[in-house]
Length: 292
Image (cartoon, rainbow, N blue to C red; front, side):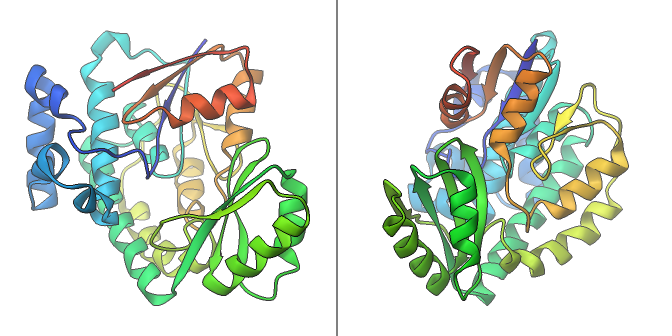
């Protein structure tokens, strides 16, 4: 069974999507439509911008979404997933590719999400750190002992958890995690504490937009980040999407559940190959490939 998976923030690169735009009429039409919806030429920044341009959250998130979704749509009959999932932002790409959201609705939500997250980051100076070499439970236990906001944000694969919190919370947690035997506890170059309680202002902003958007039954189950389980009910999908900004991304659980439900081939759609690497670390027996 085929699982199509969609990457999140961090996978961007200058020139992303240009081949699609140049060689596929459907893709070109959707990219041009995206420029109209967003009110600025995101294609210029994607194809010819600088790395600094692409690192802005308000650009990064819609850019990755567009690359992934337009790639899925340009596959035509080749896009026949038995299940889909996305990592963080990638969940929006997965929902649009699977027909739960229209292209227009999805892009508007992603743009609102990016701006809301940027504002939340400015309200609370905060960051994230990658922790390698400790069991998930140990990371959770140590985060709970820190006297500041810090919590697991991404369960990427066994032995790799990203934590999220205030600058003081991350520093204190990293010190304790290294003392407990972590191979690494490395602060990330991100704008703020994504997937933590510090994103509550962004969640409130996004909730209204999600509730106004029209959600449909997807063509296949969507494995969502908040619980690592398959969903097809539009109302459940909405509720989980609202919770996603302040809840951890349970990617390990997503992949394990898809494999348990029969996935033996994972195809990553979008920039980079991060998810292929994570899936291989979760289960070496499944086939992985990617389309860019």
